[in-house]
Length: 178
Image 1: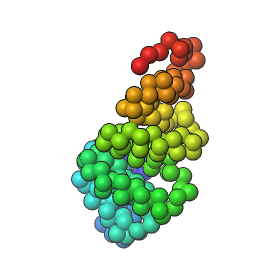
Image 2: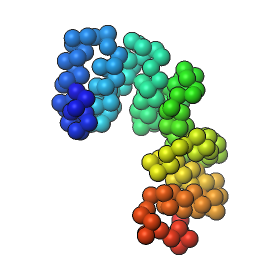
Image 3: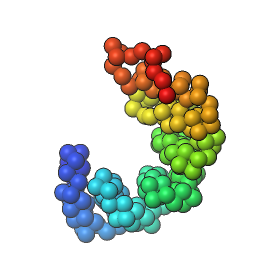
């Protein structure tokens, strides 16, 4: 299943993880990996069922709560999404996925037009983020600043994001506008 998943062969990965579940139905990991594969083919209903089964089998699985939070965000069930994400933080606030949790929460707040809440939580994420080249936190925070009519702060975040994501010879962030 892992090989198929790494090669983006999600249908084959799902079949392999389903076989693993048949052989060992108490395996939270098998449900989790199948849930990831299902998410990747946008079968959110089946992915949600698998992640809920993970929690039934292992109520301390932080990643299951995070994935359920993201699925609920996509489905615009924001209160439920925030509950799952808060549970993930409660289980282990020092978990290496803390930045991801804050990012998802920030996106929820932006979608709800709660822009100050978005800025506050995204500030936490940016402060903890050690891999800015990969994350889009500053771009998300820029969107929240726009919602607050804080255009100078939005421009600074946007320019920083551009500097991190464009090739060095393409960059001149002072020329960029929102």
